[in-house]
Length: 118
Length: 115
Image 1 (tube, each protein chain N blue to C red):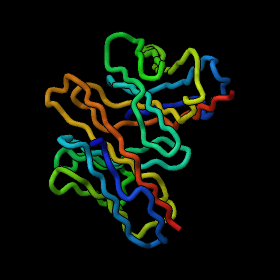
Image 2 (image 1 turned 180 degrees about the horizontal axis):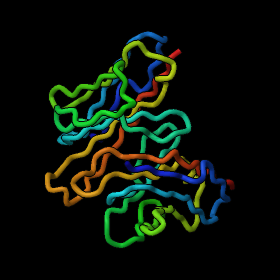
Image 3 (image 1 turned 90 degrees about the vertical axis):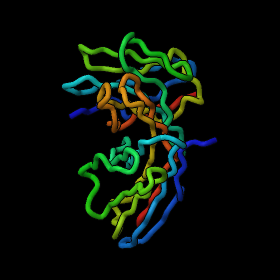
Image 4 (image 1 turned 120 degrees about the vertical axis):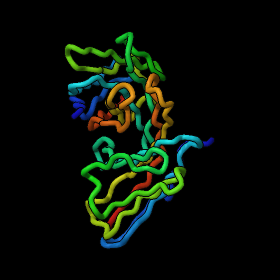
């Protein structure tokens, strides 16, 4: 199965530590999205890339958050100086664009990385 | 900006009973609409989508939804539920056409099936 994969699946850290998550999209998908889901809520958009370019960032993405997709394949999401409010499930999704916009290309979601900040 | 409201946070139903999960959206431009399902400890799976055309959309696992533009609604229905339908359901929206990118999700409806 070559779906979207995320690592690690779980991360427990102490407040103030830095953490980094990785997302491997479906092969040949040029778009990659990051979402955050807190308990009892729907996912919230954080940012997305088309190839290596970061095209949009949400206001939720504070200065402590940084995302990269250096070669247009996998992506990393880093959180510096973690806070308890950062505890959430971080979801990655990927899709491909066909350039014409005539058809919608589904976003496929990974299993997520659950972050717990103590 | 687009937004999605799911009117019920929890819906308990008996097995084999019909169910409707309600969703209203807000947008000043054309949008695509979706329902996603999230089983415990799993990622999101697309149930169905409305892009254009027929307002009645059929999805996987016997679910269907009806797009109502005048009421800005996209309610999800199933005529007879099973225990395996126990999950969290999210209504979602994205910009239509070539502008489609980020997805805006509702807060979710937890469907619990009683035997």
